[in-house]
Length: 160
Image (cartoon, rainbow, N blue to C red; front, side):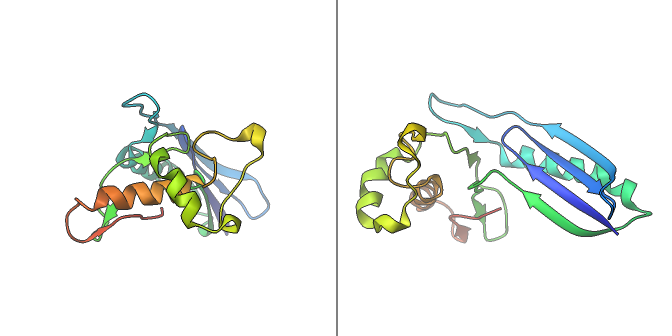
């Protein structure tokens, strides 16, 4: 009975298989690049990330044949989202939490949502993006806004 861990991060992904007593059976890591198509923008190519995830899992899986995986733990980039169609086709990139898109919605969202529904980081840690509302809310609104012109059947916000 082995255990499999998958970590999908900002710059790469890692899969590791462990025996029940905690010994590493196999591990694989793949890196991918953050894209910055415009100043202030930061995103991941969701298709490339998915290929890398499949790659690390494929590298580790054969090593667990004699000790089959019975549990999986996944860690990902916090509030990461990937827009998909109803058929689960990827529509666009995953925006990273330091991407500035969506800041134009901050004031309206802060007025519309009760204060106890908002995340307020300590002042010293705040960025313009985090002032008042969390990244996931901004990204959700941004995705819904841009999905209005998307093909029928689009799921505007899909959590990985």
